[in-house]
Structure formats: structure tokens, C-alpha cells
Amino acid sequence: MTKNLRIIFDNAHDAATLSATSEALPITNTQRSGRSYVWRSTDLAEQVITGVTDGALSVNAVVVYQHNLTNLATVRVELIRNNDVVYDSGEMVASELIPLGEWQAGVDPWGGSQLTELPNVQLSVWMPDIFIDRYRITINDPDNPDGFIQTERFVVGSYYSPVFNASYGPQLDWEDSSEHKRTESGSINTISGNVFRRLTVDLNHLDSSDRSALTLNALKSGKGGDVFVSLYPEKGGIDEAEHEFLARRENSYSHTHNRFRNWKTQLVYVEV
Image 1 (cartoon, rainbow, N blue to C red):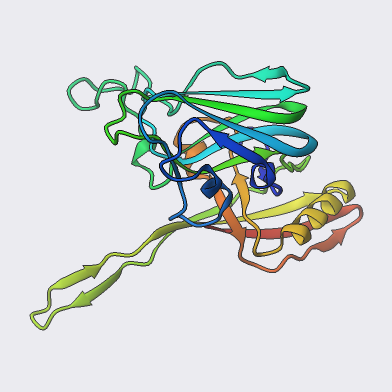
Image 2: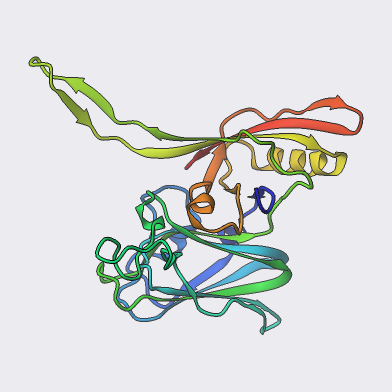
């Protein structure tokens, strides 16, 4: 593992006052939980999404979640305080391209990405803690074959990350609700369903500070609150992309004081 597990429990975007360059479908849809709620632009002109937060707050992460951006699209994240830009990511490509050492001429498309094969795609931007009162996300994707730019959610917030990382043995399940039905002749017909992820992690080495912070956050968000989980933040590639998603906690929260100054807990998150 590289950086420690990160969980964004409180998404400031959901309480922000939003505006967008264009809205074929409203930008406020990105504040609602549910795969059918999306923001969509009217065309392929540069799109600027602005959020004014509910008071000044500290953030260290911005996520553009479940988007339709092409591999060569660019995204720029700016964090603002008192009308001054205090953080600027610069233009970033929306998806990590296949490295030249792995790219196969005649097999992989130029500018291709393995990450677009995943059911959900996101761009996660991590930065130091910064106090802000608004943010600006600029998206350019002039060659998008859909003819519009679309995003399901944005996540803006500060993450929880324990001093001691999740223990080895985390389990990621790709749950598939499809069903097989046999015909009278014995053939199989498949009734297509939905695919979603379930992540089980054990935090076996929590000190008192990490345990208390996790308890307060977990109880505040409950089972019904959407949180963003990233098991391998900043690692890049499919390892990071496959193990980060918007989720809700599936199990009841509990912890065990198993030895002097140490607690342990298990978290099970299911993709929304």
C-alpha cells in the first residue's frame, strides 16, 4: 500500500450554492444521490462549475465522479478564499493514459486508457489542507462524441485517514445482480442486472485519536450518508481507480479495545 486509506465523510459540494456554464440537466443534480441524477451541458463549449461553500472550511480533496469525459479531456480545479485563488491544479487529463511501455501499437488506441473499461470513472485530486469559501472546476472536452459533458457527482471535502493503514487482506467484490435462467432446452439466458462494488477493510491498529475521530464521523454519516472511499489514494492506475468510489456503510459501526491503547474495527462499504 502507498498512502493510507482515505474517507471523505462530509461532502461540502452537497450544501454549496452552485452555478454552471450551461445546464441541459441541472447542476443541482450533482447534489443528489442516485445514478439517474446527472448534470449535463448543452454543448461542448468549455464548462465552468462554481460552488460557494456554506461558510469557510478546510478541504484537501476534489473528485469528479462518474463522468463521460474522453481520455484527452482536461479538468482544472481552483480553490478560492476571499476572491483569491489559493490552489490551482492546472489542466489535468481526465483519465490516466496507458503508459508507452505498456501501450501496444495496432492493439491499443492512441491516447487510450485502461480505466475507461471500469463501470465507473472518476478523477480524484488530492492537495494539502486549504481554507476556502468557494471553488471552480473547469472542464474542456471539445471532441466528446456524446456532444455534451456529463457528471453524476462532485465531491469536495476533507478526508479522514488513520495513522496506521488498513490491514492487509482488504476484499473488493464486484457484485453483479444479473441472473441466469435456463430454457427448456437447457440453454442459459442471462437477465442483465447492475454491477456495484463492496469493499471490506479491517482497521486493526487504531490509536485513541483515530478511533474517536472515526467514531464521530461514522455515527454522523450513519448508514444512509454517501461517503467517498479511496483505499490506494495517489497510487494511480487501476489499483487506485478500482478501489475508490462513492459508497454507504453496509455494516453497523463497532470497535473493539483489543489491547492497551489500541482499537480495531471493520468497515464494509457498498457502492451507491
